[in-house]
Length: 153
Image (cartoon, rainbow, N blue to C red):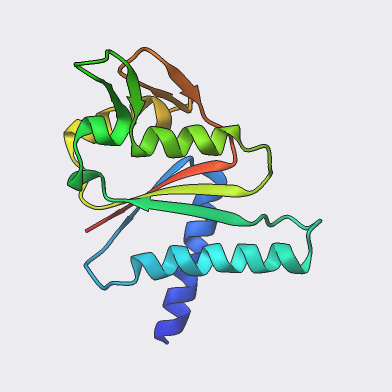
Protein backbone atom coordinates (compact mmCIF):
# COMPACT_ATOMS: atom_id res chain seq x y z
CA UNK A 1 0.00 0.00 0.00
CA UNK A 2 1.28 3.49 -0.83
CA UNK A 3 0.34 4.81 2.62
CA UNK A 4 2.57 2.19 4.26
CA UNK A 5 5.49 3.40 2.12
CA UNK A 6 4.74 7.00 3.14
CA UNK A 7 4.55 6.11 6.84
CA UNK A 8 7.89 4.31 6.46
CA UNK A 9 9.43 7.52 5.03
CA UNK A 10 8.21 9.52 8.06
CA UNK A 11 9.68 6.91 10.42
CA UNK A 12 12.98 6.92 8.49
CA UNK A 13 13.21 10.71 8.80
CA UNK A 14 12.53 10.49 12.55
CA UNK A 15 15.20 7.81 13.00
CA UNK A 16 17.73 9.73 10.92
CA UNK A 17 17.12 12.91 12.96
CA UNK A 18 17.98 10.89 16.09
CA UNK A 19 21.54 10.32 14.87
CA UNK A 20 22.26 13.16 12.40
CA UNK A 21 22.37 16.94 12.75
CA UNK A 22 21.85 17.50 9.02
CA UNK A 23 19.52 15.45 6.84
CA UNK A 24 18.77 15.64 3.12
CA UNK A 25 15.43 14.61 1.62
CA UNK A 26 15.76 14.04 -2.12
CA UNK A 27 12.92 13.52 -4.57
CA UNK A 28 10.96 14.99 -7.45
CA UNK A 29 8.72 18.03 -7.21
CA UNK A 30 5.34 17.01 -5.73
CA UNK A 31 6.94 13.76 -4.51
CA UNK A 32 5.87 14.27 -0.88
CA UNK A 33 9.12 15.60 0.64
CA UNK A 34 7.46 18.56 2.40
CA UNK A 35 4.57 16.39 3.50
CA UNK A 36 6.95 13.89 5.14
CA UNK A 37 8.63 16.48 7.36
CA UNK A 38 5.32 18.25 8.06
CA UNK A 39 3.67 15.00 9.21
CA UNK A 40 6.68 14.22 11.41
CA UNK A 41 6.62 17.71 12.92
CA UNK A 42 2.88 17.54 13.65
CA UNK A 43 3.13 13.99 15.01
CA UNK A 44 5.95 14.84 17.41
CA UNK A 45 4.17 18.00 18.57
CA UNK A 46 0.87 16.14 19.10
CA UNK A 47 2.60 13.33 21.00
CA UNK A 48 4.30 15.90 23.23
CA UNK A 49 1.00 17.65 23.96
CA UNK A 50 -0.59 14.32 24.95
CA UNK A 51 2.35 13.38 27.18
CA UNK A 52 4.59 16.37 28.05
CA UNK A 53 6.92 14.16 30.08
CA UNK A 54 7.37 11.66 27.25
CA UNK A 55 10.27 11.40 24.82
CA UNK A 56 8.77 13.65 22.14
CA UNK A 57 9.14 17.44 22.00
CA UNK A 58 7.30 20.16 20.12
CA UNK A 59 8.88 21.01 16.79
CA UNK A 60 9.29 24.50 15.32
CA UNK A 61 10.35 24.98 11.72
CA UNK A 62 11.54 27.79 9.51
CA UNK A 63 11.83 27.32 5.77
CA UNK A 64 13.93 29.24 3.29
CA UNK A 65 15.16 28.83 -0.27
CA UNK A 66 18.90 29.57 -0.20
CA UNK A 67 19.20 29.86 -3.99
CA UNK A 68 16.84 32.81 -4.29
CA UNK A 69 18.97 35.16 -2.16
CA UNK A 70 22.58 36.33 -2.12
CA UNK A 71 25.24 34.91 0.20
CA UNK A 72 25.06 38.10 2.26
CA UNK A 73 21.30 37.81 2.58
CA UNK A 74 21.69 34.17 3.61
CA UNK A 75 24.57 34.33 6.13
CA UNK A 76 25.12 38.05 6.72
CA UNK A 77 27.45 40.75 5.49
CA UNK A 78 29.31 43.90 6.44
CA UNK A 79 27.80 47.09 5.02
CA UNK A 80 30.22 48.83 2.65
CA UNK A 81 28.96 52.21 3.89
CA UNK A 82 28.56 51.82 7.66
CA UNK A 83 30.99 48.90 8.17
CA UNK A 84 28.33 47.31 10.44
CA UNK A 85 27.49 43.63 10.39
CA UNK A 86 23.97 42.54 9.48
CA UNK A 87 22.87 38.93 9.98
CA UNK A 88 21.40 37.06 7.04
CA UNK A 89 18.27 34.89 7.12
CA UNK A 90 20.00 31.64 8.07
CA UNK A 91 22.30 33.20 10.65
CA UNK A 92 19.45 35.14 12.28
CA UNK A 93 17.28 31.99 12.44
CA UNK A 94 20.07 29.98 14.02
CA UNK A 95 21.00 32.80 16.43
CA UNK A 96 17.35 33.10 17.53
CA UNK A 97 17.00 29.35 18.02
CA UNK A 98 20.24 29.19 20.05
CA UNK A 99 18.97 31.99 22.32
CA UNK A 100 15.80 30.04 23.17
CA UNK A 101 16.11 28.05 26.37
CA UNK A 102 13.63 25.25 25.70
CA UNK A 103 13.75 21.57 24.83
CA UNK A 104 11.61 22.19 21.73
CA UNK A 105 13.09 20.79 18.55
CA UNK A 106 13.97 23.41 15.96
CA UNK A 107 14.40 22.60 12.30
CA UNK A 108 15.86 25.00 9.74
CA UNK A 109 14.67 23.76 6.36
CA UNK A 110 16.62 24.71 3.24
CA UNK A 111 14.12 24.09 0.45
CA UNK A 112 15.82 24.37 -2.90
CA UNK A 113 18.81 23.22 -4.91
CA UNK A 114 22.11 22.70 -3.13
CA UNK A 115 24.82 24.97 -4.47
CA UNK A 116 28.55 24.63 -3.82
CA UNK A 117 28.78 28.29 -2.76
CA UNK A 118 26.21 28.38 0.04
CA UNK A 119 26.62 24.77 1.22
CA UNK A 120 30.35 25.29 1.85
CA UNK A 121 29.48 27.61 4.75
CA UNK A 122 27.54 24.72 6.28
CA UNK A 123 30.63 22.48 6.62
CA UNK A 124 31.26 23.33 10.27
CA UNK A 125 27.52 23.25 10.98
CA UNK A 126 27.17 19.71 9.69
CA UNK A 127 30.34 18.26 11.19
CA UNK A 128 30.88 17.45 14.86
CA UNK A 129 31.55 21.13 15.67
CA UNK A 130 27.91 22.15 15.04
CA UNK A 131 29.11 25.74 14.67
CA UNK A 132 28.11 28.34 12.08
CA UNK A 133 31.17 30.43 11.13
CA UNK A 134 30.25 33.86 9.80
CA UNK A 135 32.22 36.18 7.51
CA UNK A 136 32.74 38.66 10.38
CA UNK A 137 34.69 36.02 12.34
CA UNK A 138 31.83 35.25 14.71
CA UNK A 139 31.01 31.64 15.51
CA UNK A 140 27.52 30.54 16.55
CA UNK A 141 27.62 27.27 18.51
CA UNK A 142 24.40 25.41 17.75
CA UNK A 143 22.38 23.40 20.26
CA UNK A 144 21.51 19.74 20.07
CA UNK A 145 17.79 20.59 19.73
CA UNK A 146 18.48 22.19 16.34
CA UNK A 147 18.49 20.27 13.07
CA UNK A 148 19.22 21.20 9.46
CA UNK A 149 16.97 19.71 6.80
CA UNK A 150 17.80 20.04 3.12
CA UNK A 151 14.88 19.41 0.77
CA UNK A 152 16.19 19.00 -2.77
CA UNK A 153 15.12 17.64 -6.13
